[in-house]
Each structure stands twice: as C-alpha cells, then as structure tokens.
Image 1 (cartoon, rainbow, N blue to C red):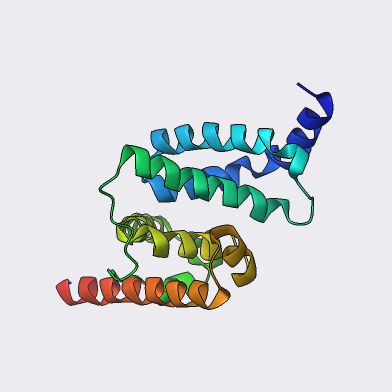
Image 2: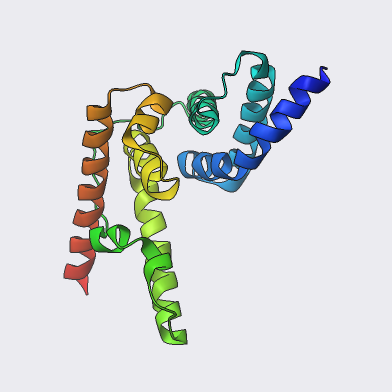
Length: 182
C-alpha cells in the first residue's frame, strides 16, 4: 500500500465521506445499507486514487458512490423500480426557501410542526423513483450544479433539469394531496 495513495485518499476523499453517505442513504433507503455501500465506494475510490485528476474530486467521488449504490441495489434489490415515469409530489415553497435552515428560530410548537414536515418530506422523497431522487438529493441537499450532477450520473444536463423538475412536481402533487386531506 503506497503511502502517497493513502495520504491522497485522506486529503481528498475522507472530507467527502459525509456527503457520500447522505447520498447513499437517500438512494438505498436506510442507514445499514448505506454503510455497506460506503465501504464498497471507499474501497473503489482508494483503488482509483492513482487515476484521479484533482479537478473536481467531489463530483468524482459522488459518481463512485452513485455507481456503487446502483450496483448494490441491482444485486440486493433487483426488483426496485428505477422508472423516471412514476411521479410523487412534495412541498415546493419549503424546498425553494432552503428548508428548515432558512426559517427564523422557531418556538417549541413550530419545532414540532417542522419535525413533522421534515419527516413527511423525507418520506415523500424516499417514495420518488431512484433516478429522480438522486437528482433532487444531489441538487438540493448537496448543492451540486446541473453540470456536476450530469457528470456524476452520466446524462446530459437537459436530462438532469427534466428529472429535477419532475421530482419537484411530484413532491408538489403530494403536498396538494396532503393539503386536501387536512
């Protein structure tokens, strides 16, 4: 094991493990599976360190995590629906305002309501098809640009924009349905 490879891995990849884990968690649907994916993704990244060009390490590592997730899902959940055509809705205003971080310091009652909304939103995002979920998570949770997302998932920028719009529309439809029920 080359010390140069390890030092490069420590410097470039270790700071991004949290981002990778969050993406893996969203795509696999639970923490234990995300941990398995991250072990594999970290190994893949470590083995590829000699080929890494340090232009955009974040996108490079997120690509490895994403591809590892899909490999893991294909092996462990072959029946998972990856169709982009199935839509589910969500709260557009909430996401566009920046989520809970953009709100003023809430009261206890507001905190409880916000936790309920956040849990509901997480569940709504979990119900999205994986192809839409990954674009939404990479954009809204990891703040990647459309170009970076396109590089990570190996699709044209237009596809990224389309999937993101469809994911947000699906979430809005879910919000409308939830509002109608109350």
